[in-house]
Image: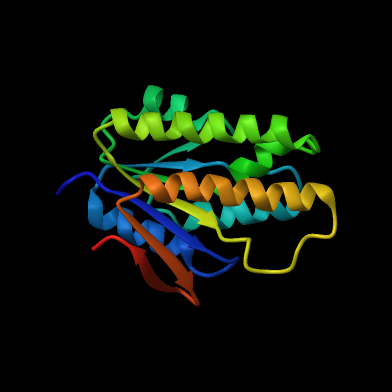
Length: 179
């Protein structure tokens, strides 16, 4: 099967992670799961634990909050498929309260471009999970608006590079790019 780059977008609890795991299993048996979430509080620790339980036991997991492109290249091993879950938290990790838009935008673009470079160099398929946060209300604070805008830019860069893009709606994939 030819190398694929699949981007899954959707809202919270839309079925993105579940579908990403399903696709990864169909694309290959040797999977590297890249988790960007950080267990900074009890609720997030519980979410991470729940996600871990849902993953196949034979998948390798790389937990890294930023610098994922470089780290994937170092630790790919024999992986045929790389699942990145998720860009949403990656962008949040890059911001960490940074209210300066130009600086935050530079960091986000650099991170996503390094990931795209890694995807180009590696002989593996990618399944990337990200939230679509631009369809709701305008955030009431500056950091929220910066986050929404930068996640949207990251999603645009990734969708431009993806072979397929799906919008997840109530656990149903709606294909918006690709065959």
